[in-house]
Structures are given as C-alpha cells and as structure tokens.
Amino acid sequence: MLLELNNIFKWVTQGGNRIFLLKDINLKVEEGEFISIMGPSGSGKSTLLNVIGMLDNFQEGEYNFLGESVHAMKEKNRSKLYKVYIGFVFQAYHLIDELTVYENIETPLLYKNVKSAERKALVADMLDRFNIVGKKDLFPSQLSGGQQQLVGVARALIAKPKLLLADEPTGNLNSKQSEEIMELFKELNQEGVTIIQATHSESNAAYGSRVLHLLDGGRNHI
Ligand SMILES: Nc1ncnc2c1ncn2[C@@H]1O[C@H](COP(=O)(O)OP(=O)(O)O)[C@@H](O)[C@H]1O
Ligand SMILES: [Mg+2]
Image (cartoon, rainbow, N blue to C red; front, side):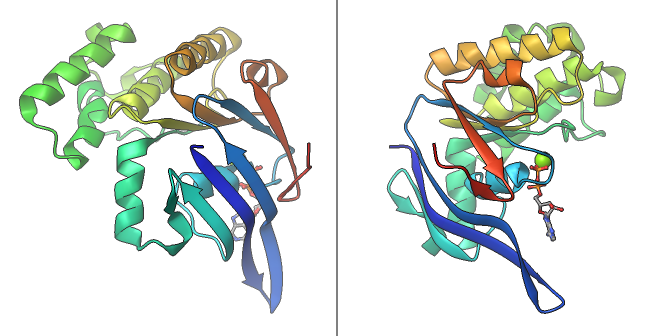
C-alpha cells in the first residue's frame, strides 16, 4: 500500500458555519496505480490532491503514507516526506519565470542537497528524455504551453518521486499536446510511478486504471 486516507474531513468556517471542502473521504492507493479523479468544478478535486500531496492540511481523519502517519506529523517532517516521494504537476505550470528551463528542472534537486555533478547529469537526462535540450537556456515565457508543461513534468520527476500528482495537467493544452502528456504519464506509470490526476477529460481519464468520482467534496463509493 502506498497511501491510505481514512474518513478525511476538511472544512473552513464562514460566518459561524462549517463549509466542507472534503467530506468523509476514504481512499486506498496501491503502488503502481494510475488513478483519475473526476467531478464538476468546485467538487474538491484540487483540495483532495493538495491533501494527498501534503500541501494542505485537514481537520479530521487519518492519512497514512508508506506506513507513516501524516496526520500526526510535524510540518517539517511532512515536507521532508513530500520532497522525497512526491512530484506535483499543476494546470498553470507554476514554473519560475526568472529561471531558465534548466534551472527550473534543477530546483527540486537543490532542495534535496544533491551534489552539483549529479544534478548536472540528472537534468541532462531529463532534457534529453523530453526532447528539450535545445530549450534549456530559454525562459518559460519563450516556450509554448505544451513545452512549459513538459518542463513542469520534468521538474516533478527529476527527484524520482514514487507518486506523481497532477492537477488538470492538460487543462491549458491543445489536444495534440494533451495526448503527448498523457502518453508520457502512461510510460511513467509503466516504469512504476504511481499517478493520481484530476481531470475533466474522459479521454485523459481513460489512460488511468481507475476513476474516482467526486461530488461536493464526498467521493461516491464505487
Ligand atoms: N480556502 C477556502 N475557503 C473557502 N472555500 C474554499 C477554499 N478552498 C476551496 N474552497 C472551495 O471548495 C470547493 C472545492 O474547490 P476545489 O478543490 O478547487 O474544486 P475543484 O478542483 O474540483 O474545482 C470550491 O467550492 C471552492 O470554492
Ligand atoms: Mg481544481
């Protein structure tokens, strides 16, 4: 088992009322799965991914990741776990505008204190694999959306995460670019990376092996 969510509730309080963003979410994910989260806008897909990705907290419930109790963990240890095991791809890429393609991809390795020679080798491999060697000195604004998302995926993968989380990764891409990203995800999954993506697209969801339907923050049990 890679991770397990048990009875997760997340809410915010507004005017004395609780507004539930996640309501009694239960989910088990085995290593090697490729899961798609679908649901209407506002149903909590991003919130759920952020909770799984340890970027957001929650009020109630248990979250176990590789046998560790995330719900009981201090922020510092949670962020360590995130750095080692999780890569995140965002719809709007979230690249750093002031850094080149090369530097953007290298960033997670700096956080992990990987030595310079190894960083160089790892980034070179990534550039090569994604066919963006020629773009390495460009800035994000000089790339197409599809190329920016390739950089986003490369950055998410550079530290060899076990779990790749992707929040509508093709939301800003045309159909050809979307297909390229999904084919890449399929390949990564075959290499053993566990993937959880939020998507509006039936054809994207079909790349996965399981679909979760979210409605108003509570998953329909399937
Ligand atoms: N910090 C917050 N405070 C209040 N409401 C929030 C907050 N974060 C998210 N929401 C609301 O929670 C719901 C779920 O949001 P989200 O997870 O972004 O949905 P999705 O990704 O499925 O579109 C939405 O109605 C959103 O407006
Ligand atoms: Mg969303």
